[in-house]
Every structure is written in structure tokens, then in C-alpha cells.
Length: 84
Image (cartoon, one colour):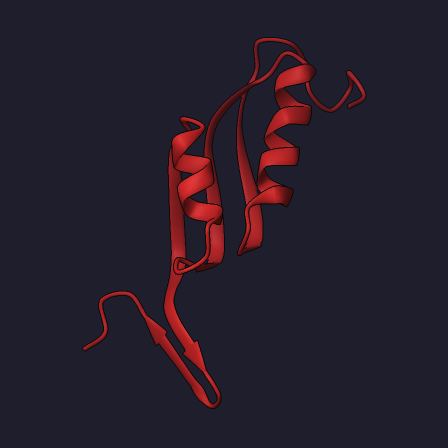
């Protein structure tokens, strides 16, 4: 990362639009940390919580907040966490 965008010691909130396997968020966090920044947390817009990405991020020690957690998807059906 270029130093005009992220400086060592800065606290950064990483935002990802869609979480499934977690590789994009982990890669982004790794880039920020290599630039010397501290990842304060990771915000996810939509997360497929039945896939391994959320667990990977949490196991790596990141605080993760999700706007729309999807617990199940099937043809024509999307169920969000907290729905009956």
C-alpha cells in the first residue's frame, strides 16, 4: 500500500461487501498490517455465515460485524440470521 493511503500505526476499519470463504478480507487485512496499520475490525455488508469465512476471520483474532448475515440459501430462498 502507498504511504499516502495508510501510515504505520493507523487504526483501520476494513469494509468488505460480501463474505463467503474470507480470502478477500484476510488478504486486505494482511496488506494493511504489512503497511504497519492496525486492523481495528472488519465490517461485512452480506455474509454467508454457513461458509467458513466468518470463522476464519474470528479465529485470526479480528472483530467482525455483519450487516446482513445469511444463514441459508436454496433455490428461491434466502434466510437471514434471526429469522424464524
